[in-house]
Image (tube, rainbow over all chains, first blue to last red):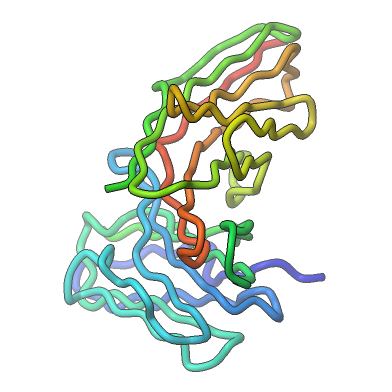
Length: 116
Length: 113
């Protein structure tokens, strides 16, 4: 069974350009998470969707960041305009939320973004 | 709020040495606790979990016990291997809160032959 699929794996862009990161969650999962990983700040939750609806976007840094989940099998994280401080590895994770105890998150391999 | 504190790395050990990575937490509710591992160039993957006090999670020779009285979930392994070299993340998730996890800063483990 395919895991969480992210694209691109690597992106190098110049400051001011638009960046779009893509994620395909595991089929049947109803929750999707975007995380950002940097040396300075560690792993930060950016946004969380449940049944395609954004539940918590309090971690989104600023208006330059936006995320969408138009259907259960696809999500995007967009940065416009990008800045050098956005350079990081962006992870997408999915899980099946059925209530009760916290379940396992399944992570993609990440998209490494470098903004020059 | 919720937070997880891990010992800073890197931790460098020789093969077959004993490993302990400390993790403490604060939580507004009653959390489940997790250890995730990240191998170079990969995403995080679940290593073990515990859902209530005094539970012991174990996997691949690693284990951690949920200690409510000390709000801790320390990771241990009796004999590490070179293949255990990775970054280890402690995390908590509040039950009935939709699988949202709060992660610690991560601890890099390097095992030398």
